[in-house]
Image 1 (tube, helix red, strand yellow):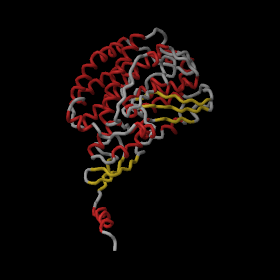
Image 2: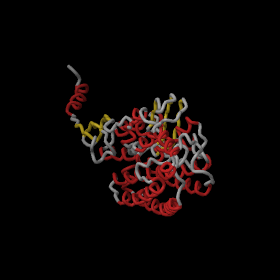
Image 3: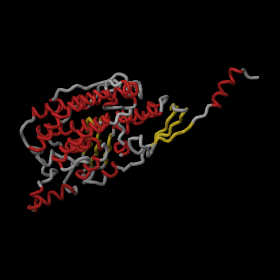
Image 4: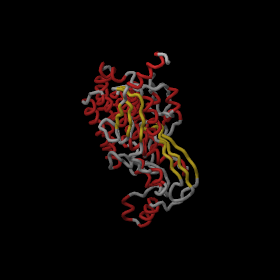
Length: 402
């Protein structure tokens, strides 16, 4: 006869009933098309299984069939909240393969654009965190500033969301006086708006109760998962590609790498808030120090001729066709280049066999890497907290599935 102490836990286990909830793939609370099957004990999450790939578009395989210039629009569709960083990161990877020396002015102009893109990326993420805690006002308020940045993009390259911005070697044209006026207007008008947003949420008791201690991850676990970007820095690790492995003359600028302590939703929010202030500082420094010089490197075999010459000169038309269609010789080689994207280390691993297209291109997408930890981060939390955790991680489905 078994002891009652042995039988009782088994009875309690059998009597406990779990429910299963499909969070996604198409759900208004998810930030993209991906699925989480949650094992629920009432409102508490016991376990979770994630499924991705719903919008997998085979970017890497597409790149193996496209000339180098035609890959730029593919990068737009990864993290579409900060497309210019993707574009410029890809161009720098090709320049590394070609061994091209980029003029200092081009590097500074790229820094200005990448930091504007970082601001819009963090702005969207933190505004959405506010929405998921019930504060819609800040979201609407900040999105007006996002529009101002998109107007800057529009003046520089003619596009807004998926920008296809820049060229291998630099920019298609120098910044116009109108573009500079819009940049100046933004860096004057954005700080008061950001301060107002912080007053709304940073010390708000409801917001703090909803975010502090929610979705936390330790520095060791974050490193084991290969986290990077704001999600890693929120856990207390001061790793930033701009500081650790400077590119595009980031070593010329003074900026702080903000870090958190608990790696929770509140820390991720605060790290992104501080990074927006740092980005503003970097932009101001770049404008103050902006050197004279050309807006593109001298690489005639890869830099597209000006449109007016293409329309009126046969040789320029031929060069334009050869470059776009991949008829120019590309050296053999194997390179890796990374930039600090909105969500972390965005890397391009490129292998060239000398053909018109890459032999292999692998994209290191930050979202794909840190989303692995999501089930672990939400176990034991409430369903509403799981939504907030997802918001604060800034999971972008386009980058996740690529």
